[in-house]
Each structure stands twice: as structure tokens, then as C-alpha cells.
Image (cartoon, rainbow, N blue to C red):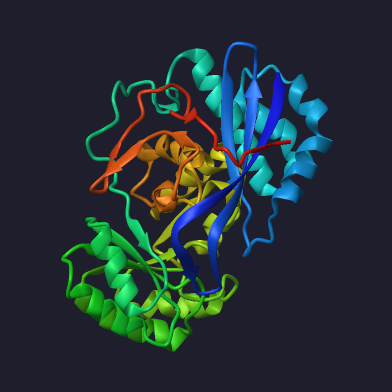
Length: 348
């Protein structure tokens, strides 16, 4: 098995702003694993909040190139366990590698992953969740324009400003779509409780990550008093986060890059379900390489946020498509991705 690393600077359609960061370009790394007959692809992005860089991912993968290329690719879960002691300090690199080996495995077997994992499924169930479309923080006027530019049945609205409730009130004038709000750690306890009462009036489905990630006491109080369900994002990172989130959140937003790939994500889904918590799979601002991997989990989850590639000016791959929120699965095997690249690619 041979590994090749591809680096890209992905331009966004609009400046993407959340409570603690904004950007016009997203740096991303694609890991390619080739067994002589097929190539599997996985992705991880740079990330300000988690302090992850392309350079750090490349460094740890290159240091372990020999170990990676020695593996025969026959069991992705086994490969994750072998590599975990070596890569656990960089879950993003671990994620890209795990997705790549899963994609390669599925292509070698001639099946999409969801059929391998759920042998009783011949087709994707009709009840898979609809993806939201994210509206980043901007002037209220521009947020309205972005929403009108992309008519959609569910919007995730990024908040964390001095006019959060005004934003929701104004956006509601232009659509009957479901709203989800994501404060990205920007609110306080009393503010969240008050906002939950107000937001309920405007058909908001749930609140995502209102407090700082480690404010468990605050979340416990909100959990008891909120009038809307609460989903963890920054508070839910790795497998041991699930039990911590119980009785603090009603659901968890699992992201492949945070936890280290598909292998731990599937264990987290099961654990959350066992604890009677809702499960959402979320994305970063990533290409269809990463989004395709998320799509394979759809039969196992309640909600999904897989609009990352829709925020890009130009994608580097083809995978599942979103049509008015509905997810049209790729017909390809593995994760369903077809890698294409861009002119600005850097092969490392």
C-alpha cells in the first residue's frame, strides 16, 4: 500500500464567520492510499479552534509512513487500533487516514460502506435525515441574502453576537424553514435559558453548544431549564465525551475530525444511542471527500449537518449531492467519493 498526500486551499463562496473565527479560504489535506488496484481517499482540514494545521498532519503521517504502507488494508478497524498509539495526538490526521482506508476497503470489496456495515440493507432507508444549510454570522441584511440565495428546508444559524434574537426574528420573516442555532460557546447560562424561551417562538429545533466546552455545571443547569433541546459540539470530542454529555445535553454532534475518523465515530453513535441521546453527525468546511464519508453513516443517525462542500466555490471531488436538503447518495463504492483535485493542488 502506498500513501500520497494532497494539499489544497479551498475558496469559500462567502466569508464564513462564527463566534470565534472567520475565513475566506479553507486549507485541507487529502490522504490517498493505493493498493495497486484502487485508491482510497480521506480528508481533514486545518482548524483554528482545535489548533490543527496542515503541517502538523503531514509531519505525523510522514513520520509513520513506513508503518502505514506496510498494512494490507484488509480491516479498517484493526488498522485504526494499530495506528492509534502513533496518531492519537492528532485526531485530524488520524481521521483522514481512517476515512482513506475505509474508502479503499469498500472499493476493494465492490460495495459502499453502509452496505458492508448493514448487511441487511440493500438500499439507503427512505427515512435518512435531511441536511441543514449553514448561515454564518454577518450583517442581518447579508444573512437574509444568503438564505434567499439558497432556499432550504433546514438552516443552521450561527450566533454569538449582540443581536442574536434580532437575527432570528428577521430571518423568520423570509422563510418557514426549520431553524437550528449554533452559539459556538458564546453564551452564558442565564442568556441561554432566556434565549431558549424566545427562540422556541420562532420554530427553532434545538440549540447547539451554547456554553464554553468545559462548563459542565452551567450546562447541567441549562439542561434542567431550557425550553429547547441542547446538542453538544465542542463538548463532544472523543469517545469518552459521550457519557460526560449525558444529562447535560439531549444530543451530541459527532465530527469525524474531532474523534479520529469513522471507526471511533461508529462506536460513539452506538454509545449515545444506548444512553438514549440523539445523534447528529456534523462537518467542518470540507470537500466532498469528507462529506462522502459522513454520508455512509446516515442510516445510523438522527440528524446530519453535511453542507460543508456546498459552501465551497469549487469542490475537489464528487460524492453525494444535496437537493433541497434531500441527500442523493453517490453510486460509487467505498465512501462514494470520486477524487478530482484542483489546479492549486500541492502533492506532498
